Image (cartoon, rainbow, N blue to C red; front, side):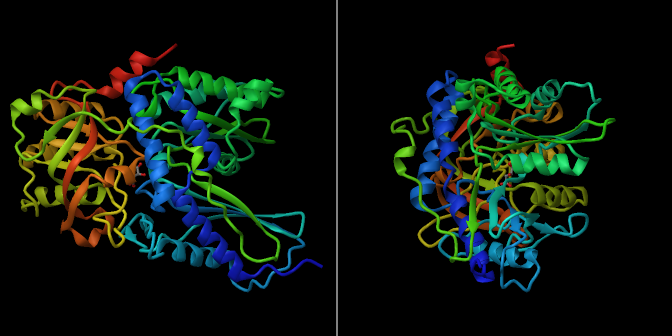
Length: 496
Ligand SMILES: O=C(O)C[C@H](O)C(=O)O
């Protein structure tokens, strides 16, 4: 008879797995990203991938999160019907205990990103609970667990459709990715679920993202099934779109494409598409009753040598911006920023605009200043601030005209493309939109030399902070003429 699988071991293992994946990319992901780096021809995309890889190695050695968005905990549990356990509580409660322990670890606290009551208060739960738990009862006497941490930017780009049964899944996926923008932080992966019911398709797409990257092996041995053929077709067609790392234009947008299928109704073809970002994080383990899972650190030789390829660019002071300086910045140019900037993202923008509409005064003077869209991880002793990469700027588009007009703000820093109205507002106000590399959060945080909360403390990671930065690496994405790198870059690198 098999040994009992203890609740304490389950909780300790899930907590340890969540910590582990916060700072170690999966080895297959590092290898695929390193390969993309070697093959990349677009200088901007290559520089972005270099930052992602440098950041990844720094996190592996520093045991700090790869991305400031440490994600929601997605836990997939397969319980063997013959497994013996001492569990007396709901699985959700046990896994939430593990999430709490992982997120609150003193040596590597993770960022609490989960808000409860999404339609009302949107109050942060404070410890990233609850987890998203999927459970299956399977054959056997073991418990198999896959733990992943899913960032909000990539999750937001999820697509779903019920196609005509004779429709083309590949055409739909390629069209969707072409429209998806870069907020999902490519290069990454695509998880596709086809068939089943609508909810089943979505669950399959999510779970498929935890499969190891094997597209190079698949290409070498040749496809043996329709699904394998389609994986290669979608990978090649998506990469030919030229979107590239961070949407800057380049050869690699996706490192792998996963497709899971299930029988479905004769009238239906449900298709779900979920992208995974450059901070893809997951691990599997099995509990058999012989104690908690043991996780082995990856070999540091997995990361390619890219010394000397760190961020470069013209130096720009943020403390004496004027129309002439701003007009001299051109879309696509890389810069190293120094001086003072403020932070503010979704909740802070909502509050600022509500204040302005009510005739109030903002708690910070943004005139002639830069605003960084970021929600950082809390610092540990010895740090100024934890990992602090950009959040998706597109979500701030609806506030841009009002904020620029009312405050005289001159620079916004985030990631991904801006919409047409925001670009027009940027042009009209002689402002600039810059991007930092999503997925290089720990690297970016090294350029932050001082940090303090100056307003909206109650918003937690979304509070307004003042940062003093030295040589913060960015790329000019939209310049004062309204030219956007997210339009010109992919156009230049498209191979269709
Ligand atoms: O929440 C964040 O920090 C980033 C978010 O995942 C995003 O990609 O927009």
